[in-house]
Amino acid sequence: MILTETPRCKLVTQLVTWGHWFALSNMILAIAIASVYIFSSPAPETPLGLTYLLSNWISHIGFLTFFGFIILILPLCYLVPSARTVKAISAVLAAVALAVLGFDALLYNKYAVHLSFSTAELLRTEANTAISLFSWQRWAFFFLIFIFWLSAQLVLANALWKRVARLQKRKLALPISSFFVVCFVSSHALHIWADANLYHPIVQQDDLFPLSYPATAKTLMSRYDLLDRDNYEQRLELQFDDRISLINYPLSPLYCSVSAQKKVLLLVDNDVTKLASQTKLRSKIPLYADRSSMRDAQRGYLFGLPELYHQVLSKKIPILLDLPTALGLQVGIYASELDAGKQTQQFSQDWSNFEQGVTSGNTNLAIGFVDSKQLNSLLLDPSVLQQYQVFVVKDSASGEKYLYSNAELYADFASSEDLAPTMLNMLGCNAPTQNYSTGRDLSNPGRDWLVTTQERMVIVIQNNKRIEVSSNGNSKVYNLQTGEELPDEADTRLLSQAIKRLSSFAAKH
Image 1: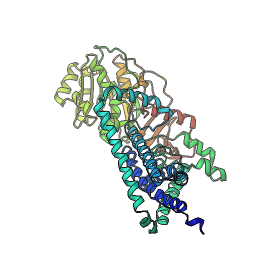
Image 2 (image 1 turned 135 degrees about the vertical axis):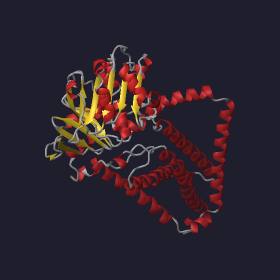
Image 3 (image 1 turned 180 degrees about the vertical axis):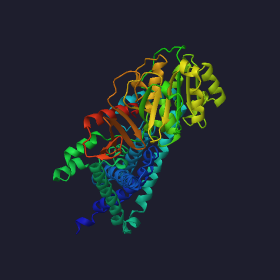
Image 4 (image 1 turned 30 degrees about the vertical axis):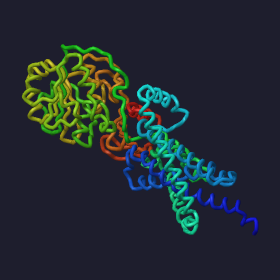
């Protein structure tokens, strides 16, 4: 009893109590700083994903802060005899730790990476750039900011120390600790479930916060035979990120020549009215071009990339238009409403100029999103079919789309992404198709399957089968003609190859 009342024990008790309140205060500051990670990433699109985000944000950052208190500050409370020294060292440690967290948050905001050995080269490059660009006044400004931040920590430490007796009387330890524990347990439980089901709105947040290693179904549930490992591994292999924020387009610079003597015309008409001069368009191929909107349809034809990438292509110029123009060819587009990005507006023409350019043969590459009257007026002009390699996309009475052409095409089926590489190759450019499109040149044989996307689904077509793969790796097989679901197992190797091809343009952060 006498021992517990010694001044040293009283001081230790006060320091430990003060340390917990100091840690809680810095938890709140750290959670506020960590909001930068949340605002730097796309928001989850589901309530469950948002619930996980909030619980993981609070619990993970709170855990990191409290862990730092346990290993750095708590030992000082027992080992250092001076309260003033403990407060000073703790304030310095907290200021440095939160400054590092802030730097990591800014690094994530700019490059979507965290501080680690793998990012050392990036940091070195950034440091060299900063040293060369920053004047001594700017470095002095940053130093003053840190001094202010350290001073704020010292003021906070002293303010809490003066009120430690009052704070000790408040019965807040249990509700506060319970709140953080509930957030911690719920976030890990949600992640285990999401990992088992490959629920993308949660799984895609794995790298959001620094030093984040959430519990997984693979390591926990499989231990108790609650998870089919073979099925899990198969779905994991087919999982893909359906939210693209950056794109490499093209994958590498294109070097090729084009011929001013060659002319290509693409006409897209969604009406089922009978096609004029159909007999002169000897090629007829089923075309998969099921798009969510007219904007997606236009971008699919112009960029040669599926719907997955259309959002991030808004500021890009289609290679199909940019390369021929740069090499001196005349390019024109007609659409009653052209919605393929601001950069394509420079190629837009009204109908009279577009029609005149085609009938006179002055336009080397003409692309028209037309109605049936406009389509037939061009096809009934004999000079058009004589001068141009013509491609016509037309709906049939059965609702299917077909690609007609007066060129010889080698394919049993095609997608809208095939048109861009096919037309560019017919203009004389033999650059590798895979550098700018997920489609292929239909004038050359060799197609076994095609891959495209519709909304959040990957579509693979092969051997009269349509395979749909969701973002969590689940797949279904349908008969391409009847739409009936088939009991067949999807070819994992084919799907893995298709998704790898599909994801090739997604830029790595």
